[in-house]
Each structure stands twice: as structure tokens, then as C-alpha cells.
Length: 219
Ligand SMILES: Nc1ncnc2c1ncn2[C@@H]1O[C@H](COP(=O)(O)OP(=O)(O)OP(=O)(O)O)[C@@H](O)[C@H]1O
Image (cartoon, rainbow, N blue to C red; front, side, top):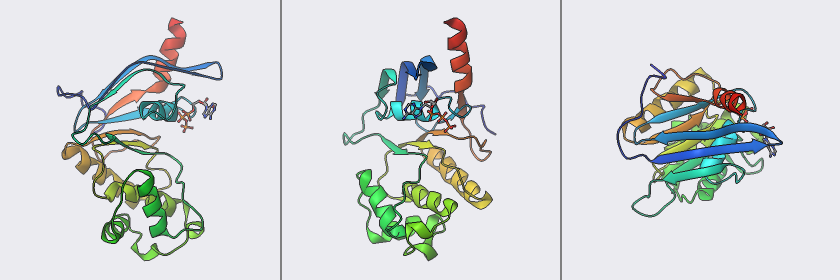
């Protein structure tokens, strides 16, 4: 099922042009353009160090080394149109699971009530660990705390997820794929990176190695 969808002919959620980035005198990408429409998913692929994280952080304004034009569609409320979830779990060792999730939510201007926090933890199969401390969690459980963000109410419609499948077991991968598919089917958009090739939903792929190679050849 993956990799066959063409961009939909609707007003884009995100339109970026002439994106370029050079780091440590190494060209990562140059004159790159991408668009994302409502209901679409775009996977950023490429080898380690090819610039996937750099590109995604640039698109959400977290990396000023990325130059070019980035236009996000305005939201009716004027709120930030994206939810960015980076590749590091960022779990505090001395907070409980539910405290960590609340903190991660607050960092993103979300203020979920206890019922919403409990429902999100249940969705990622962590109900039994809600009062465990961060340092007591496995790598996959830490990832699940972070991914619980995707089950909170009031999220922006475009999700930007860096390596969301890292450390998940097979059941976790399948559950996340189903959740991302439902998000897109409901008109949400998704920009994500992964070395895993998801099979559970439709997405286009932007291959960054090809971009860098083409730019190097041209220049
Ligand atoms: N803080 C930093 N300062 C300078 N260079 C950096 C920094 N972080 C990453 N880089 C460099 O930028 C390049 C792209 O890194 P980036 O993290 O975007 O790659 P990636 O495609 O996401 O890799 P991976 O698949 O390993 O996660 C790499 O060459 C890396 O060395």
C-alpha cells in the first residue's frame, strides 16, 4: 500500500520551496520543495545523517540553518498548525509516567485533564505503569509515553513526527500505523521520518539521499 499516493489537489497545509541546508560544510539538501495537503502523509527517508531531522526541525522553525520559504496554512484560532514530536523521548527520570505526559503536553500548549491523560496512556498500553518513574521504563515504554501525546484532545491537524516507530514492538508499530491512518482518513496531515517502511497506511516518500546526490552532481 505505501508510496503510491500523489499530492491531492487541495489547498496545502504546508508548502515549502527552495529549502537548502549546509552543515559543517556538507550540503544536506538544496532547492528542495515539498507540499502537504489535508489527509496526506509524507515520509522523509534517507540514510543516517542525510538531514531528515534537520529538515523537519527547519519546517517547524526549530533549525535556522535551513533556509527557504515555508508557508503553513493558518488555523482558524491562530494557533500553531503543527504538533512536533522529536526523536528523543525526553522523559524525565524522576517524574511518573502520567506526570511526564502532562509535562510533554504542556510544552506543546496542551492542558489535558486527568481523564484525557488516562485515556491516552490506555491507548498506548501504559495504564498499568502510570505511576512508574521515568527511569523505571524500557526504551519502548519511554517511546509510548511520548506517543501518548497523539491521543490527547485538541491537537493541531498536522503532525510532524521524527522516528516515531523507534523502539516499538510489533504490536506497538501496528497500533501506531492504525492511528496514523485514522488521523489521515479524518483529514489530518502527517510528515514523518522513519527507517522502518510502514505498511499500514498510504504515504508519499521524499528521499533525501537522492536530493543531496542530485545537488552535489549539479553543483
Ligand atoms: N547540533 C548539530 N550541530 C552540527 N551538525 C549537526 C548537529 N546535529 C546534526 N548535525 C549534522 O547534520 C547532519 C544531518 O543530521 P540529521 O540529524 O538531520 O540526520 P538524520 O537524517 O535525521 O539522521 P538519522 O537517520 O541518523 O537520525 C549530520 O551530518 C549531522 O552530523
